[in-house]
Image (tube, rainbow, N blue to C red):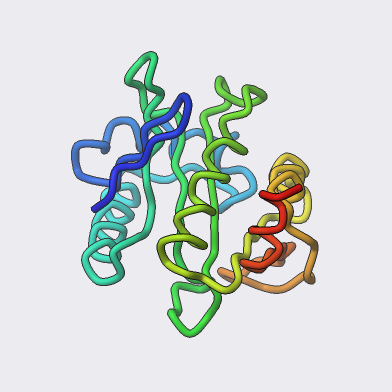
Length: 176
């Protein structure tokens, strides 16, 4: 399992040791507002950790927790996985942050680092991101990442906006 780094964050694959930080993150109504619509329960957080650890074991990638290097605090989480958790679907990138870290540039910093993993290490031909139609903060990050709107689709039983970027467009973005 790969630990990643960016300028201000360390990306640690999800483990049981992250339970308390994940409870705070996923138990926050503002964080979960556009994801599930309600905070996770302690049991749901434990189940998420178990599922994510299993995906790391089978795929070699999944969710990382973002650890702020200056404080050592868990301030967010992000993933490279497959849309609908089906390897026949394109790779998906996702992220979430604690509200007290919003507006600091962490989301784009994390998204760029995870996209590099998807395109350079996993050789993904296409990377998608989904969000609730009302989540303008996420669509802004998707656009900053160079993603373009694809369609409104249903994922995880909810209507979502789908954005995407291909590997060639990602590589060209780096040249611009």
